[in-house]
Length: 295
Ligand code: NAP
Image (tube, rainbow, N blue to C red):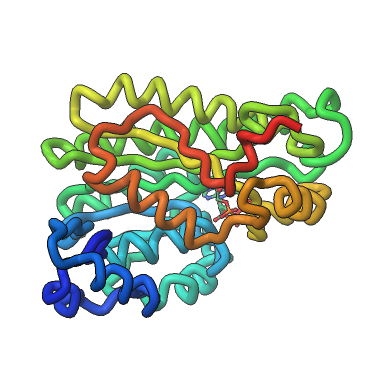
C-alpha cells in the first residue's frame, strides 16, 4: 500500500514497499498529517499485466515496481526466450510475479498470454503497454526514406499492438474499474530529428488511446498515455543522437534536468489507480516541463 498523505499512526503500519518514502518526505508527512484525511493507493487483491520489461532500466520495470509496492499482483510479458533471464533479474524483487513469453506481433501469443492471466488471476485490473520497435535504419537519416516494411513494422508493434491487448483485456476487466496505460513521446506531436517513423507510430498510438477510451469507457475501463521525457534505456539508445537529446532537455526543460524512471513509475501508478478515476483518453507529459517551452 502506498500512502500519498499519511495519518501519523497508520503510517507505521505501511507494509514493506519497494520504494518507501524518503525519510525527509516521511517526516514532512508526519508533521502535516495530524488533521488530514489519509489518502492511500491500495492495490491488494488487484492484478496487472505489464508488457515491455527488457532490463532493470526499462520504463515498464519502474512501473511494475510502483504497482507492486501498492500491493498489486503482477505478470510480466517479454518478447522471447532471449530476454527471459534479464526480465527475471529485473523483476526479482517483485513478490509472486509471473513471467510470460509474448511477441506482440503474434495473435496466438497474445491470446495465450491473456489466457494464462485468466487462469492465474481470474481477472485483470491494470494493463501496461510499454512496447515499441522500429528498424535501426529507420531511426536515422531522412524520414522520406522509410521503407514500406519499416513503416508497417514500427506502427504494428508500437501502436497497433495496443488494440488486441485492449480487446483481450476488456473481458477480464469487466466490473473491475480497469485501467490501461501506454508510453508515448513528444515525437507524436512534433517533428524530432531521427525519431522519424517512431514519431508517426506515437501519433497513431496517442490517437488510438482516445479511440480506445471512447470504446471502453462504457465498460468503466480507462485508457491513457504518458508522454515521457528521454530516459537512457535500450530502446532509447537505438535512436541516433539520443545523448544530445538528453543534454538539450537538461538545458531547456523548466526543471533543468531529465526525468527519472521512477517518475514515470509514479505517474503511471497515479493514472492506473482510482485517484485518476475521472481521467481517460489523455496524454500526460512527464518531461520536467520540456514540452511547454516555446524556443
Ligand atoms: P526498453 O526497455 O527497450 O523497452 C522496450 C520494450 O519493447 C522491450 O522490452 C522490447 O523487447 C519490447 N518489444 C519490442 N518489440 C516487441 C515485440 N514484438 N513483442 C514484445 N515486446 C517487444 O525501452 P523503454 O524506453 O523502457 O521503452 C518503453 C516504452 O517507452 C516504449 O514505448 C518507448 O517508445 C517509450 N518511451 C521511451 C522513452 C525513453 O526515452 N526511454 C521516452 C518516451 C517514451 P526487446 O528488447 O526484445 O525488443
